[in-house]
Amino acid sequence: MIKRLILLLLSVVFIVLMLFIARNSLLQWAFKKAGERMQGRYQLALSAESVSFSGVDDIEIKNLMLLPGLGDTLLIIDALKLDLAVFQLCRGVVSFNQVQAKHIDLHVVNINGISNLPSVPKNNSHNTTIQEPAEPRYKTKAAGYYRQLMRLFDTQIALQDVHFTYRDSTSTERIFIPGFEYDRHRFSAMVIDQNTKDTIDLQGTVLQKEKTYYLKAQHRNDTNTRLPFLNKMQGLRLGFRELSCKMVIEENRQQLSLLVDASGQALTIAHWRLAEGDVTIPDAGLHALLLIKDNQVEIDSSSTIRLKSIHANVFAAYKRKASALVSCAVHMPETNADSFFRALPGGMFQTLQGISATGTLTYDLRFSMDTQQPDSLEFYSSLSNKKLQIIKFGKENYPRINAPFDYEAYNKDRFVRTIHIGPHNPTFTPLASIHPYLIKSVLQSEDPSFMLHRGFLSEAFRESIIKNYKEKRFARGGSTISMQLVKNVFLSRNKTIARKAEEALVVYLIENLRWVSKERMLEIYLNVIEWGPGVYGIGEASAFYFNKKPSELHLSECIFLAGIIPNPIYFKYQFDTSGHLKPYLSGYFQILSSRMLSKGWINEQDTTQLLSSLQLHGRAKQLVSPLDSASLLNENDRE
Image (cartoon, rainbow, N blue to C red; front, side, top):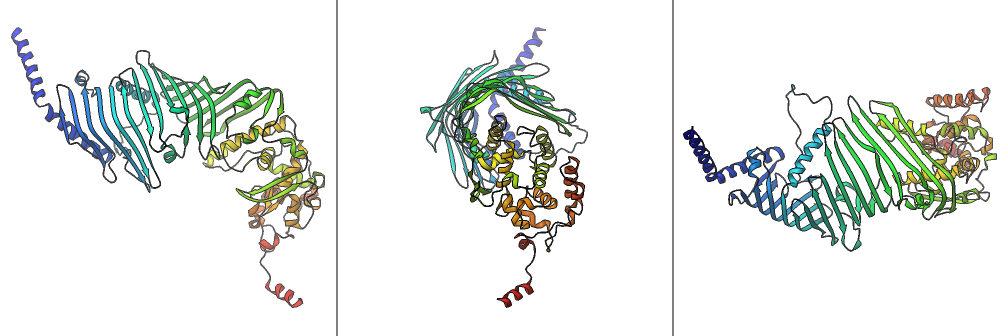
């Protein structure tokens, strides 16, 4: 028995000795195989000047390079030293106790759509016996990434002289990291933007036993210079003076939970979808509990966001089984109104800047949709107040439109002309001088509940979301006449989140504080909207199309004018060359007149021969009817 143990021990020693002697050959073989995998999977050539062991478990690699098949060199590391974790290797896991690297150059090129970054390979497996799981495995995947991160946190890291360059056809951005140090507990680094000479200090702490992680990023000299790369890659410009974050991660059989406490000072965000310019947030915070299950990702309802001194609870969930269920909710409890207005991000509520108020505000939002059954969508949004009073207006005094004022007409972003909304304008038409059929036609077409609602219709928003989701495009808006008026008179025409948010808040104030009557809002709306090419207001429109005053219009003419409001410049495609309305529009006329008739707004006899009684007589007829050469000759003879 003893002899067998001695022989076994000698065999093990012999095998270990042979492996030690041949370790460099094995290492170079492993490096070659890794290069073949990189080439086959990512089309990247992996090479090095030398790969060898130094000591028992230290690997040294000199002049490591990653070179794409087409394009500039992606990565160069002059010197790389790896302390191999032998005990982990015995378990079949390749990991390192320590990683040291000097003179690292990562160079990303993207010129005319050609990049040296490797593309992620697609799964080309044709094995039809392998089936994807019926349900997603979000928790399983997240837990796998978390374990990889834990192994990385078990590795000491020391990097020196790191350069990261991004170059495209118009510019080059460069980042320099003099050093990055991590000792399995704390890490620190200094990141220098070589284009702007801006420096960010990074510091962090890893408490693995407590599963707690801290990160702090701070600009030197209290600056908030924009972060590099984001604008080129994502069209996003992001800046901050200081960010801090604490994360706690827990895992059990059912879920992986991530608790995040984050705060930021002097944040700036710019994106063409968000706002025209910079959005600034002086102080913000986030407390979020993220729950990841195998078929669901959820932000728990205990989560809160903070802007200055105001807080709101948030909830969001994405659940996937046979279909995807998306839901979210926001609740801002009763909040001091003045604090609310002071907390609004700069650059998003331009006309409200400087406003001051008393009273309180409360807000609630609920949204839920099954992607396979979009018609089941649930939507609710409500802003309520208690004793809200505005004691000082900001940049805009909204009640000014109760008196005559000048309106600046735009065609998209192009200024057209200034229009006086008042008696000094000969085409301005008071509401009492507009035919009731025109008023009813516009209300029925644009906003049937205008005289009853407070600026918003949740059902209109709901239907708009459903239609836009089904058609995968912005096919329908949910704007009321109040919202269209505020957009036209007070705000820009840009389709940004900032403009829509400001529009909603201003409409709420005007409607709920009764700054402007419904009748005056409707009167202004009918006198400022575009009715055709360069035609603004109902006074100009009735003359342009029918050579009449607004009080003289017939029902068919009123229905036609109401129908062209969404796309007034395309009116000429609705007429034939003789100036008569095309028959295909009979359906619209029938629907609108039937709805008006059911409400008692019109008489039965008014609905007969609607299309046949409609014909252009104004200047608009010249745009749809070809010139009669004989008539022109006769006119020349008479002259």
